[in-house]
Image (cartoon, rainbow, N blue to C red):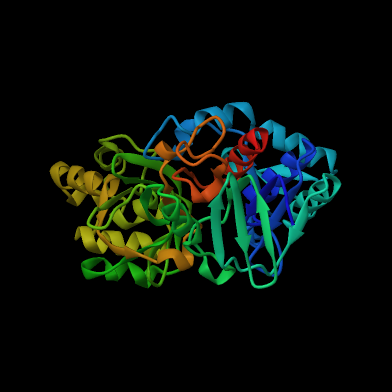
Length: 389
């Protein structure tokens, strides 16, 4: 069969690109390896799909080219996607930090995208494990076990290798290399970190969370951190994990609202207050106990020198953890790195040196923060490519 565009990958970016290209009168085919489209959409946001973020902005994305995402994000915004959701009558709500979720189910987003594709005349073929991709005479020929299709435009929308149990793989990178495109080394992002060595003690706090400010490589996020049986997780840790590299430390401020001198001031105001009681006022008891034990401070505040309390303040404000790794692609929400932005036009997402070849979504070296940013990149980049096909 001949089409105007073939899109590899029936995830968020692929389906969105297909519907917009179809609306423009293009004959579009989506080839999806799995038996169903939108698998990662369905598990996102606890099954309610955190489909965008009101505060979407270029600064919320990691990339080897910090300017690359600006064009697509500016031309197709979070409000554009919200308007589509509203037209389909999908109820939604806003949680913290601009995160938007379906009131009902992520299935509503998948159904909306499929319905839009059908209305635009898009053909979706599932269960298609691509065997070969060839390019000659200005056309791409895609062969799977059951079919061969051709088109002058080919869109790589197969994502990265995060969450392999959902069918994720490095196919996008292999295909990009086939056409001579450079790859920024991929790595797990938005992923729990593991602890070893002296930090193993904190694994005993599995299930305990606290509101903290976590920092990695000079980038700080103020959200909850969660101790697990393997190490550290929770929104604050997932956020900084995208900036963390093997061999780096992570610092956690357990009292982000306190200013230097707060423990000394507390001592002068209530010297008979136990140090543990002060920690317990703000932290879960088991966490407070572990921190007090590591600080080797016991008894009343009045029995401590001001110097000792200032040292405790400093340690609590920048508690140093040395992760020995992460939980890898199996638990990573997204993949950082990918097809190098320098290979692509930021306006159209087309490869500069390979006419008709496009890359969108997670396959590209653009990675958003936790909280709907990666979905918005899928929508914006998919829309940008659709306008150029």
